[in-house]
Image 1: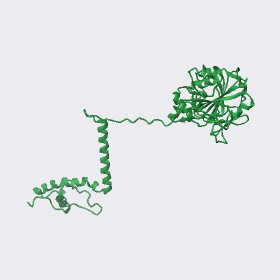
Image 2: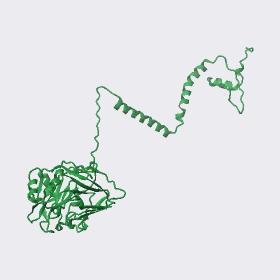
Image 3: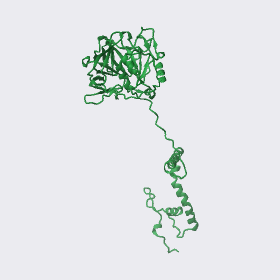
Image 4: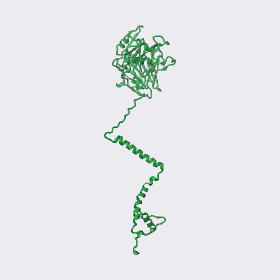
Length: 424
């Protein structure tokens, strides 16, 4: 056996301080073989059976320990976080699969489809201002309000959505105030009706509140085609205040008028309003002061444009036009509509009233010149109206509808274009 010499590759491994283990081929050898190699001991040509069996048993366990060494190196909190994330992903995947992808015959699923919440506000059909749906669904109510010297200051005008101003008789102007989304509780003085005010109120399907009227107006409003709320037939819903003399002392409130409308069955109004838009103030106003020489100086209307509120401060007879909010109000609030419109309508004298004054008659069906003041400027266009129940329209020189700013619209009827002046 002395002539058997092991191969050179089994010579004792040479190591150095700089390269202690480089070049050693230990991969795939057992621990004992590695020890023999490092010590220079010659290996046995025939491995012991028990060593082979022992090596085969130890390798899987040691390899498993190596594979999971990274996990044992993590701290406890991080391991819990990883486990939780895995469970969360697994749960979400299972939910999506069983609710959207998984289809099992015979299994019924029920899903609740939530409806979109109803809007909290809507545009008022009368003014374009955002109001509650309940306010927008209220009936339109038109109230005749006096404008003689004995009637000033009035009450309720500041809350109206639309106001029409025209001459009643003897050069004295009168207002038709239309309400829908507002409900003032002190309104007056309420006075008598004229036929052209019916023509202004009818397109809004409005209840018409008045105290009597001219013979022509009473004959027309009593035909059954209009919502007639005459004080003569409904006295319990009006009152005469002691602070003013008759006939300038008839007042009412929406606590009373809402009840009267309900009794009459006037619960809503169906009509076509005017197109509305958002405010768009012009950089350099072209119409800051407006003057309407309607009738005589005691009834001249004057407006000063207020850029801050983008509205028009109204004056009358050379003084601010005030509105009292209650019977105890001793100061009043100046009226300031958002949109001011002057419409030129032919005016003539009608029949004589009981005092010997002529009733006014306007040709309110047809077309004519209209001056629309808003945002500090003016649009000179046309008004047109086909008949009693047809809405009046405002168009520009190209025939396009003029959208109006949201808010109160004040319309003054003048007999000629010469009664309208404005300055930048």
